[in-house]
Image 1 (cartoon, rainbow, N blue to C red):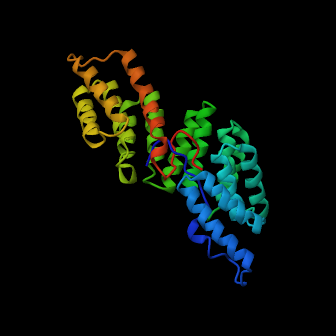
Image 2 (cartoon, rainbow, N blue to C red):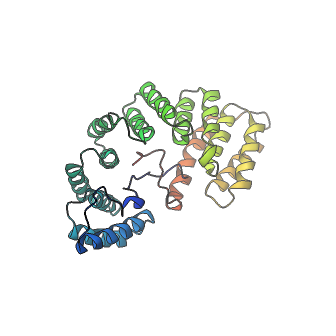
Image 3 (cartoon, one colour):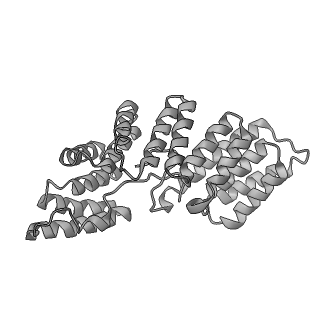
Length: 293
């Protein structure tokens, strides 16, 4: 799982052939289902042009299907056509006002456009859906808005609620690590970065790198070296490997266990460049610095 990935909620492909209606499908509806299933698969695989073609054909056959409109909207999003994305997502919600996944897509679209208050309003509407299975993402997204609005205490509260919904949600741990480190609560930051490296995020280098950086800031250079060496051994083919090598060289030049504050500031900027370089490496589409779609 990449720590710079949007997590796009798509109507599940597995649901595409099992709608709630029991009526027999017409020939046109059957074709639309096939196009929808194929288009959704292409969308998940990030073949956006082909997905747009297939979902567009499904839409032409059944223009009032909320699922097709939702996925078509997200295809337009990835093609950079924001107005069309918003138009189709809103139409999807007109047809299925209770679809919290589609609401999340629209709110996250607003977030990426800087329309924070509109996004916040929709996220809070989603929280009213008591049977929604992905509220941990909703709380996470609200935390991101709070951070944009310089409300770090509120962001921490939302992230803690996210973890109550899903105790192994490494995105929330990672973000808490960043917040606490910014506050110079290094021990708490380190614990959160450690939690962020467990479970499904074990194979992501970002939390391990941030542990090394945090240990450096705590002037625990020997432990920091261990983390950077581990990162280099486990993730030698990623953009983090040269960064780890750079940190090791800097630490080797600081035998007195002191690291210049300017170096630390530089260290905290470099990981984001590395994460940007990995944006296209994951199909999972999870992001820790952008809204969880």
